[in-house]
Length: 94
Image (cartoon, rainbow, N blue to C red):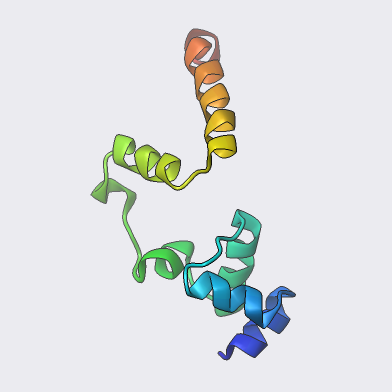
């Protein structure tokens, strides 16, 4: 599929897609989902070039990889979420 056709399918500009492809821009999860749907591939395939089994990585590696890709604002939000869940584990597991 050409960049022009993909851009049309996901309602984004060709420039936007080229910048993502060249590593100059990141995209939202929603946009990633749109790319996967338009290309009829999994997010694993789009991100890693192949299907990745989650048991290939420890939970800590997966979380670390996610956090490593976040900016400071995203990290602050995730930290608040993790702290809230962590402090309420006993209540959540009932």
